[in-house]
Image 1 (cartoon, one colour):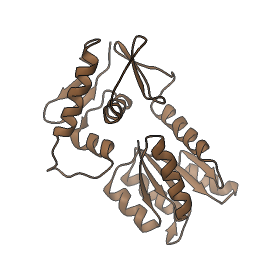
Image 2 (tube, one colour):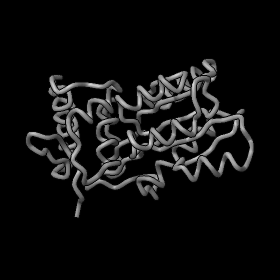
Image 3 (cartoon, rainbow, N blue to C red):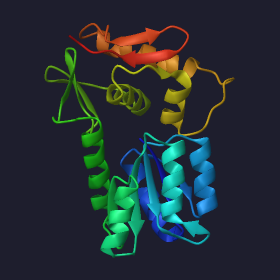
Image 4 (cartoon, helix red, strand yellow):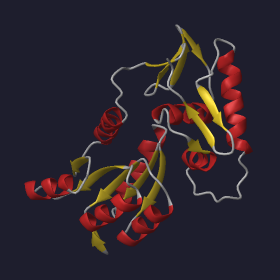
Length: 226
């Protein structure tokens, strides 16, 4: 998933980036209110981590603006402020969680995973998908009890479609998620098509994948399996 880290303490920001990348998150960084605002206007994120004490603006104000440009993102406030009023204010403004500094990075990851479970209504370790099951945390795909090998990009693509089940995702949306960069309308969409083809080829060896639907001229979706 794609994460924006807005933190003026650069050492902490780089530590978070390094840790989250090892957990297969795609990370962008901003070290000021202005940088964070510009990235939020340009890109869509799954998570936004906001430090309240930015040098050129108030984190609460940035949270308010971010909710308009990235309404589907999950927001975690990172701050050294320990007052109850600050926590309540952040949560009332739409933050999903509040983490006081200093904190342990595994706790940050656990809170992010907990938000994802609530947001996408994940109640089981293995998510059923037709004749297959997917473990998002361990990044495994199974047919019955047999593990199927997918590349990192293939798994990222399949899991992102699964989390947004029944929703059509455009090739541009999928490309931005997989590669983490803004792309324009003139980009080559063959990369996504090639990955989808490979996913189908690998899974069809075991069972049909009619649930992975091509929406002509738009993109792809995983439709509900009856």
